[in-house]
Length: 433
Image 1: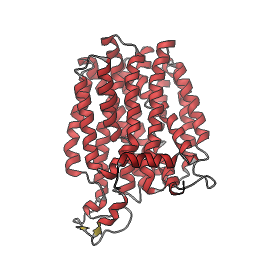
Image 2: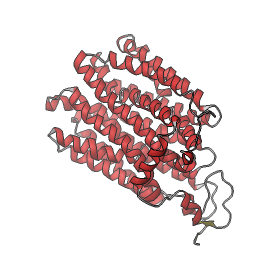
Image 3: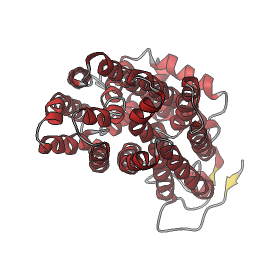
Image 4: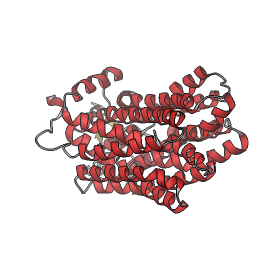
């Protein structure tokens, strides 16, 4: 049996350095996911495409982003966190960089849809959940909330600068901004990221003192062997036999349909239809991102202390009410839109920490990250349907009102649907499935 040499004792557990590196990586990846939202109109204008056509490209990107999630979770276990993160940033940078040369629809589908979609799927919410599960025993909910917030906050905070670049330099300026961000984070990942606490001679944060040697045997619980694709599929086949999986996946389908698929993709265009300049509407999204950082981090703290089913009930219910209010806010006084931005920002992706916790409670720690990857795939399927559906409704009806109303009603339904998750009568471990 081999051992890993203990590292020099430090007042800061290395888990927090891993969190910082992951936060920066997710922030950079989020900038890439933000870019299409401000490029829809100029791309439509240059190539004379409808919003439904451009929305179909973004829908492919969003769907693949979600579909990659469970396979990425398996890659984290076989290939390692560090190498998977490096691959993700490389794919995103290459996809966006080459897209500046694209002139045909199929080229955008390949680059924006498949290359960028695959890269962003490897550096997504599943990554934050995997880091929190692997590196933390205590504070796991808080860390999940913080890393989840970075994925949405970065996406929204990047929007004003991307909108200004698009306004002054054309849509091709935005992909180069994304390339710069992904390239900048590569050396940070290379030098500071570690796959497992045992790599630095430590146990997960909160699991006790790491005095003496830490054996490599402990790592075998997180670094699984075998084909990652087969592992992801086998986990799905077992998970679908558990009712709670469908409740969690269904609620996350609605979560994706009501956030990055709808608001993240179409709010700038919807605001432009109502006479609100693109930079101003992008700034509203950025403000939502700042409030999301507070709301999602707080949600992680709350999920460590309160019943996660009731938290989700409140989050989905309040989100549904806010979406039903949005059409009036867009055409009313500016104060109404500001209220929506603050309210919706706090609730943007606060659903993730309690969903991660419930997934772990139902399916167990060892399989939680892969099962959650499939739940995220449902999230992005909802986002893809919403991204395309909202664009189609706008093209067909000339307005986004129907899309906002439908998403609001779905959120109210999801609020009721999450209440049975994890109850004693239905809870079953994946091993028993």
